[in-house]
Length: 109
Image (cartoon, rainbow, N blue to C red; front, side, top):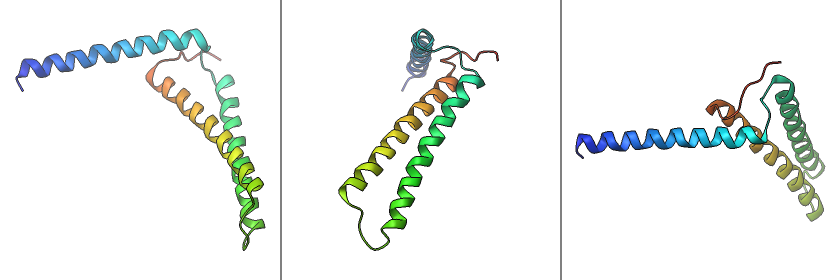
């Protein structure tokens, strides 16, 4: 591949990345306030509580049914706990990614 083609591709990708960054900053700034420890840590706490509920449910069913399979209602309850936890965890990771990329402002305490 000719060098000027490679340089054009790199320049194009840099421009696109900057456009994506600018778009994310503009759109996300309209939706969420600057992130501070005061509004970030409660979110982390919520995720931890959902994780604990999910693990507690799994442990309870495992201990209760050492020889017998869990029933459909118990599976549904475990699934609900898992889905709640996974949704919260994914949202938390999306926020961390947005912070890492500079898509959100970090506010003062």
